[in-house]
Amino acid sequence: MQHEILAFDKKTEQLAFSIEIPADQFDKLAELMAWGEPEDAIYEYELTPEQVSRLENMTGRAFNSPDYIFQLSCSA
Image 1 (tube, rainbow, N blue to C red):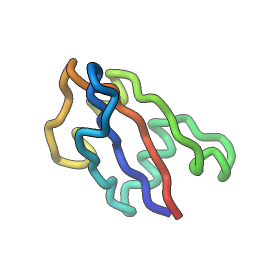
Image 2 (image 1 turned 90 degrees about the vertical axis):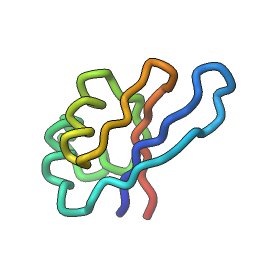
Image 3 (image 1 turned 135 degrees about the horizontal axis):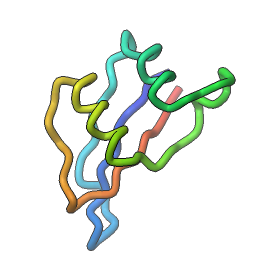
Image 4 (image 1 turned 90 degrees about the horizontal axis):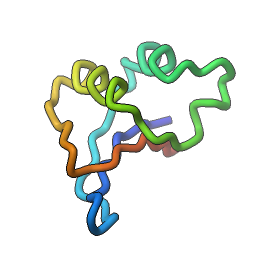
């Protein structure tokens, strides 16, 4: 299972970029997203500004911007 942060342009709603979350960060990601059941990890989620900030720390990348809508996506 691979999780990615998807950034959509607020004006065009087009995907602007994506960032993979390292698999070794899964436990931290599950805590951040407050997943209670294993199947919770397979859905897509809109991310709050606080979640985006913590994901920046987890990925080691700065990407937050008011120009984007951020979502968490999962692919098998």
